[in-house]
Length: 32
Length: 523
Image (cartoon, rainbow over all chains, first blue to last red; front, side, top):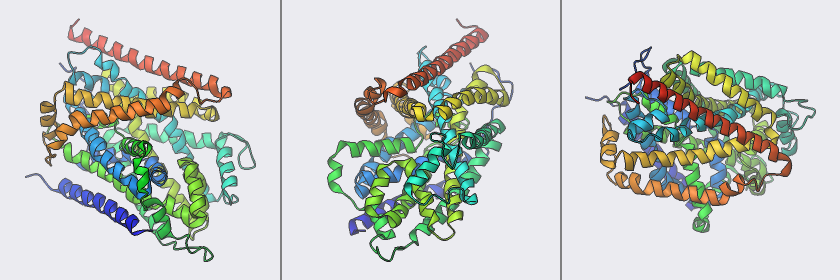
């Protein structure tokens, strides 16, 4: 796999997992 | 004024439950089979640029539109598109008939989807019993599939009876879950099903990434290069319209927007329940299943055993070929292959059932809402109608019935319905009111730029998809230009059945509204 391929893979996975963590944390946070 | 109901309105058990139900509806066979094929064929890593742009401009806005509109309609005790559309545009007498698409589309998809889903149940059993173990190349595995479908009687299957047996089980399971209801049936199945699906998918992913380069004579046929086959960007392909269209189409179909299903799910929320974060969370869960899990299994696995040339040919052969022919061959060659083959087919079966139960819901809930039937009676009526329609798919499978239903129910109706939804939301309901409704009870604040995107960009994006699609596929299909002569009578018969179903649903809408008007004493 080329460097550009790795960049796309890491960026895509990172973006989706980052969004996932954001959503899970906000969803589990209790409303005051 | 809302009609008096015989029984208290159903509700979701928890916020997580409705998110997982929507995610379960979105996560389907397309995540694991269609996405990797589309990415590999349309620019590799570069495909992700139009893919993510489509996610932000098309997928997410439509997700929010459906969640918000559904919850709004639910406030008037309306749970399906005809009623919900009327709550949004009360002055229009005809808008309810446009809502028929939101019941017709999912019902048609349900008819052929449950049959495909039943193949996965059958193959899960075959994986354990070793029924296809004697098939060691693409040709013999393809023949096994054709025999199973009853297309070509062979040494494996003399008729469609085995497939029919698994279809009956799958169909009964779907109806049972819908019969049980929202909280005890759909919510529970999605919670457990998605958990098992993710566990199996991660197990197969780990198996695939640890394959290395199994053939010492071909060290370049490695997992790393398999990922490269999918992810190495081919920039020049971004100049082609078909790549952008493929990415937009993939996002559109993977999120289950435009089906009418999310409208129904969201209608059971309370007014103070969040929709903005829930929509985003369900979309993100679908993306994890698609890009991270779906993108890491079939293409890298096929690459290490068949090399770049073989994988290209397999990808050209389409998603079904990859799932039912290539993957069992690949998994025959790894340690604990029987377990991993079972895990593969069963995870796809779970992805299928969490989607198909959602497809059944709009029609069942329509009968409940508008004719005051209880859930069980509505489920039985739905089962009788769809069971009969399924016979057409099963026995005329090789004659184009399934493709025809997929084309009109699973493609055309979905795009048209999404177009109606976004116009109703942004232009009829009005963007100020819609934005305020979207943020009512919200756990997040959506960036203001989405006011502009939902009002202008998403409708234009959808119009472009519809226009390109109609020129490239719709018009030739409508005129039967690509249908072989011997299949034409079957395709026309399938169309007549679909028109009958649509007309029948439109009549039921007319009847229900007439009944309602008589009860409320309005002309």
